[in-house]
Image (cartoon, rainbow, N blue to C red):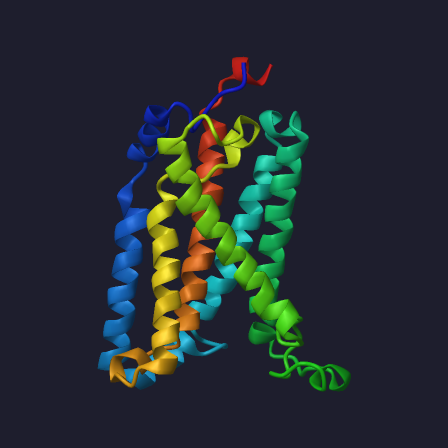
Length: 245
């Protein structure tokens, strides 16, 4: 018998109730408060240690968290439950490839830390003169980001609503990959930073210029991905040997 994680709704709620609110609610909230506070108190310190591509905490997290996501996905690929399901093999393979790609692109494939000079032929096609792909065209930068955000909203806002209120509608064969309710707050943080970005361009309040909203949003997107990967790994660890046969 294939184990269920989102049906019935009581089981779906119970799963998130067992997870610590610190990592998906309080820690993100503290991150927002701390980030804005530091940016307001000491702007030069913030620019050097948070926003800089070489020494900034944001840039490092945008590299580290996707790489951890990829490593978790690779670990999951070796689980017997995953190896029996072609869709799950595909799902975790995409997560692994996507995590490596996102992390590599954020670090310009090591250039931010090794400091090598961008080849002359690449300078002409990269608008920031870095060795990455996402700065070469709008198609490789904004489109993938937009698709990822839409996927987060559909997967972690609309899908949980259906799982709770119309539980017989979602397709059961994808039960394992449906995001847990714990992903809802993180998705809302991604959406809030989207609003912050819009306000930066349209509202002349000083607070909206304390930091680049895109950096904070990328942090929460990376956070979302790694937490989702951890949740799937946790689900795998709850599966008994009898369920795998």
